[in-house]
Length: 307
Ligand code: FDA
Image 1 (cartoon, protein in one colour):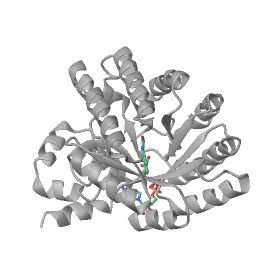
Image 2 (cartoon, helix red, strand yellow):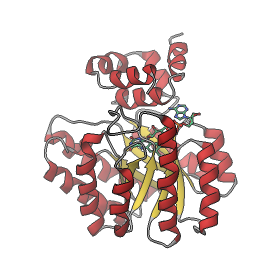
Image 3 (cartoon, rainbow, N blue to C red):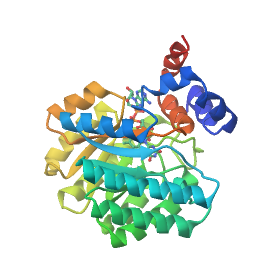
């Protein structure tokens, strides 16, 4: 891992920096590159604009590692209201949540109960509930949460990270559930015995895992989502999907708002199903630091925003 990436990921865990940056106008200006606004109304307007162009979207409210059960209850209620708004506005929007934002650190049972309620509302409103994957210490618990959701609901998906050495085994264990999996490379700082330190190994693992997922999708046994901006990988994978006979609509490409927007449109024009993940909310600091760490050159954008 590069020094810049490692420093940015370390900074992402600093509450002091989060507090300082969240108050600075230049930082808020820089963040606008990756999010349409802090308010849900701005995120929903962006979903409507993208819908007009043919994109699906995924919404997520920023915030993780809560400190009180009441905060988790409020997050659950926020998302319940969001599912209702998605339906009433007729938007093709999914919702993605972090288990720690629903209180996983405070009460595993309360978190599981919140997620069940949300999965039920997702299904009732024609949407989907996705679970993000956080750092490696949460993987077992997040897999357990997904298993219990999947036992009762169809429209639930899970993120798996290709940089984790354990992911091939996790994917194999999940496939009998006929899962919906969003594969990503992985955004956290992990030790080398847990995650590949070399990006090339992560890219290879992403390809291999995607092919397994697409093969299951071809048989109708999984819903595959390729969550990456890596166009070289995507070209190889869309070609492999055609070879495997994966039907249109049996897999999607997900990318983040503000990253490779022109390429997102080009993929759409080629007939791919593309969904853009839009984040909103005031607790953007750790998430924003992870976006900078993915491409440390982005830091110059922050510096330019100071003037
Ligand atoms: P890679 O890092 O190789 O980037 C490929 C190219 O994309 C770069 O060369 C650059 O051009 C562009 N690019 C990538 N990131 C950029 C950035 N921040 N700014 C500007 N350009 C950039 N992670 C996780 O651990 N848990 C999760 O739940 C999720 N969820 C998630 C959902 C979705 C829809 C996406 C797209 C990603 C995630 N991630 C995630 C993040 C993921 O793990 C990963 O860190 C990023 O997607 C960056 O990796 P790429 O696959 O894009 O490849």
